[in-house]
Length: 144
Image (cartoon, rainbow, N blue to C red; front, side, top):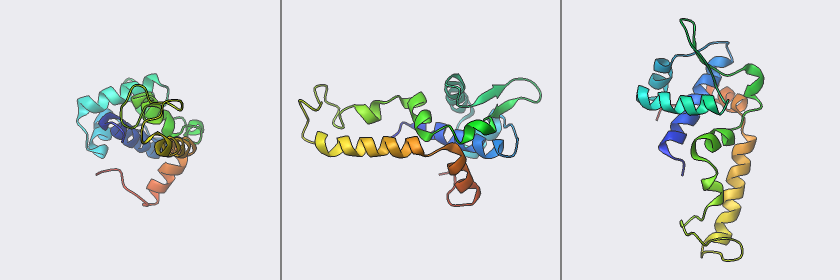
C-alpha cells in the first residue's frame, strides 16, 4: 500500500517522536539502526521529512533529529504519508486507470472510494503522540 520510503519514513518519525518525548535528539545512525534501514536511504527520507517540517534537524556535535513536543499531538501519520508518497493512494484509481472518476468509474471505483476515504481519515486522526505512546507501552514494535 505505502511505498518502501513511506514505511521507513513512518517508522523513523515514530522513533524520533518516542525519543522527543524524553527531550532526546537522535542521530542518523541511531535511527537507521532502530528501523533496520540503510543509512543513505534513511538520510534521504529524513531530508524529505525535515523539508516538510515534520521533524527538526540540528547540525553540530550536539545535533540530531527531534520533533518539538508541542507538535507531537498536532502531527498526523497522514502528513508523513503525504510528504513522502503524496496523495496518490487516496485519490488515484485503485486499478491505475487514467479515466477513473465518479462520472466514469472503473469496476472497483465505488468500493474503493470509501476505503480510500476511511484510510485517509484514520491516518489523519492518528497523531504522533498517541502512536508513540502506544509504542512506548509495547503495544507494537518498530522493527519488522
